[in-house]
Structure formats: structure tokens, C-alpha cells
View 1: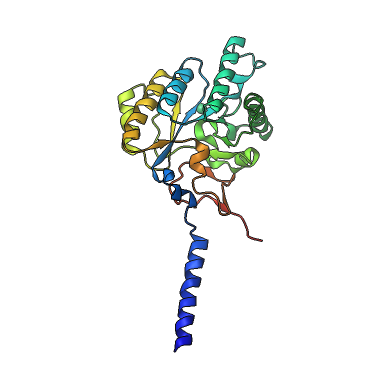
View 2: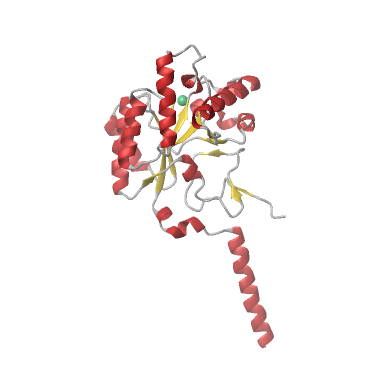
Length: 266
Ligand SMILES: [Zn+2]
């Protein structure tokens, strides 16, 4: 009788161990900070000499972190598209982003629709932009967003981009490049944002910068923290779980392992 009892206890312990191996608890949640809901504001198509600078000031004031998906040619003296002065200012803004704790990521060199380009062109667009960013920041580029989100259905673009992680955005789009109504965009963000959301805006419009800062003030009152893509996407990594360059990341909710990769235990 006693033997059966011990066997039952051992079986329960084994089941608990297997459960935690399959569904690991998030160790990061223990330090308290990560329990607050978090959201990643992301800004595409910059830097913009006036608006990005204004945005960085606003983020600093709020102790908010963000992610900038920059266009390579804006940082390139050789592109012939921007004046030397503009390129110098843009590069200084990228330096400032990193110095102030933001993430700088790749949004192609010429803002071209990657999935419609040749493989050679995609390779060039991504590599050249990474070279320019790294030249300025001294850091490797870990994330990319295809212009227009156009690589949603093209795994070969992600294959070329690897080991960079492809990042899109959450369930709604303010279309801030078209809509210039700050109140309606702020409403859309504060009414739809959830813990783990990725918000898409463009830091080349005054209205988009106003929208971001006003939405942050309301979300901060609800307890939100504003984090980089790097912090948001890695909230559930560790314990052998890593980000997967073959997937597209649009959100990262607490305890979401669905798009993560588990390293094989050898
Ligand atoms: Zn874009």
C-alpha cells in the first residue's frame, strides 16, 4: 500500500516537472518590473531632422524607449539624394537614439518593396543599411521591417534578412502618413493597445510625433512601460527559447511562446 502511495507521489512530481519543461515560467517576471504591461512604439522612415529630434526630446522627458526603423539612404553621403548637411544631422540623430537607449533597426536602403525586388537587390538593400547603421552606432543590427510590411508572405526575404528578426506591427494601423488627425489617432491607440503590442508610426510627421507623445501620457496612467522592440520581443526568451528569423513578429504578449524557437537539448 505504502509503495503505491510513493509511486503516486513520484508520478505527480514527474508530471509537474514535465509541465514546467513544456511551459516554463518567465523568470524575468519575478523582479516585479516586467509585471507592468509593456508596449513598443516603433517609428519608420526616419530620421527626420526636425520631427525625430522633437520626438527624442519627448521620449527623454517621459523616460520612454522606442525603436526606429531607419531608411539607409538617409544616412549615406553617397546616395546623392540628400544634402551633406541633412545626412550629417540624420547620422547625429541615430547616434543620439542609441545613446539614449533606443533601438535602431533596418527599414531597407531606398524604401523599396522588398518582396517585389530581385534577391540581389534585397541583399544589397539590407546589407548596405546595416553597414551604415553599424558605422554610426558600432553595434550590429538585430531587427528589420520591410517597407509596407510587404514581406508578410515572402519567406525568402526573411531568409536573406536572417539573422535579423522581421518585425511588423499589431492588429491595427493608424495610417498616420495619411490621417493627420491627432485626436482620432490617439483614441485608436489608447483604445486598442494591449500588453505586448507593437505600434507603428512614422517620425517624419508632426502629427505622428504629437500622437505618440499624447498616447504615451494616457497609457502611462494605465501603468504601461514603453520599451524597445529588443526588450519586448525578448520578454519570453531564455531557458533555451530564442527568437526565430523565419517568423514575423507583430506582438509579444506575456507568456507567448508560439513564435519562439526552442533550442534542442543535447
Ligand atoms: Zn516605411
